[in-house]
Image (cartoon, rainbow, N blue to C red; front, side):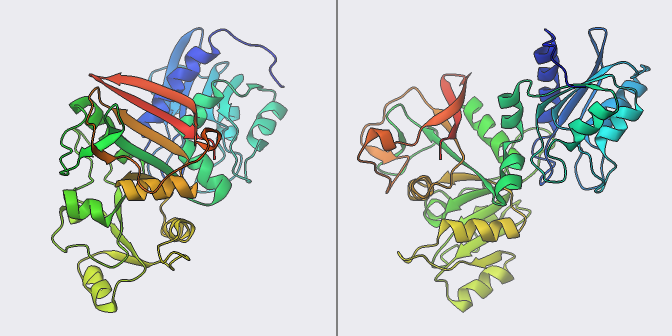
Length: 371
């Protein structure tokens, strides 16, 4: 049956499910990081999130398992799930069948699964079994938690986040190149978490040559290391650059590198993607994203430099912007964007669904671009 009731605690319990969702984020690609909690008589009986790898349990199964391990009975309880429970056999049985078999009486979901194999069928199946179903609770928040999955399922292309750390006047470095550190420690920790959330971190060759970054995750505990992607049109990447360190895979995208240079990069362990140049003689973003998607990259964190950031924004391939703003002025310096210009404010890319957080003295601002 379709629920018309707006239970006052639905958002409260969905926020608990969202906490579980973020615990799994970064580990589950290309699957969504779903969170679920089982609630009865105003108490959480169990919770869980999607596990790593194909064939491992989904969030609903983990939540029911914890409910059982805690000594509770799930019959007559409500399930809060950030994404519609699946309805098809893939590497695991349908989660909607699992909820039905567990005696769940009410299911509350955040986002409909756009996968054509699901797309509302899970909700229909549960309603047909007599379960009360309410959908769309904290829909924006739930969509934000699994925006990479929703995008790549709908568009068969990687989800792209543009990240930058800037001063109040939009500068990323002094004119002499000094940029460590514009933002504080808490901002840098958050930036490392963003790397964990994404399949790959992407930079241009100029950033590698100027800063020699590692682009890895350096946080306490166990975290996933992202694939590194370097845009290197002519094959100038040094074989001893720090970006090679601690990388599960290094992808070098090029359009003019010599066969000898490409061989050297491959012999050093890199995956080299030869991208057809566009009319300007540069790598086209669409061709690049298609190649990365085919290589199993479903989400990308673009970290610069300014030319790459400006080109990505100008090309309209960015879905989300994530900026760390420090409370200082630099004046004459290097801007966050290069080669990006508009002649009418109405044409300015604008963020929606904006969230912000104080990180020490810095401000973190993130939102979805209205492409």
